[in-house]
Amino acid sequence: MCIRDRADSAQIPDFLPERYFVQPLTAYGVFVDRFGTIRRQFEVEIQGAATDDGFILDEAFIYDDGVRETRKWVIVKCSDGHYEGRCEDVIGHATGRHQDNLLRWQYRFRLAMYGRKVSVHFDDVMVLHQGGVMVNRATISKWGVKLGEVLLSFRPSGQ
Image (cartoon, rainbow, N blue to C red; front, top):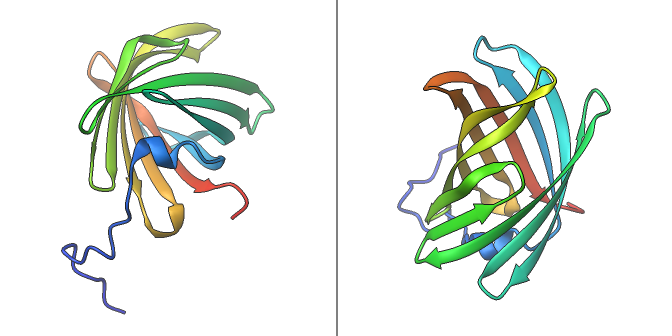
């Protein structure tokens, strides 16, 4: 089998975050620490809704240890390819840049660790593939030191 050249536009799906994220999605993820050990696995059900200037994401997490968590994102499209987002545990706001089939998303977040909330930095790279599957790699760091990665794959629910 031969992989098509990147210049083949049929290979790159049409991707607009404000369109992709308003459909019901299911995501499957894993947190891998900086030593390569899988620390946690989870599933996320995501419901999106369009707004006048962006979209809202309601996320419901269930972790392999039975813990449940919800998160609500409010995302605003600021200008061509630029986005800002807020949710309860984000410090300030998240910023994103979209180009072709890629969305890069960065933010500081209060992450529950060891019975308390710790401020960490997330650097997400999301790539949409054919068939509506999106792959996300989020690098988590504190003071510039990598703590680990979250690896996620999204797909439209019902597929």
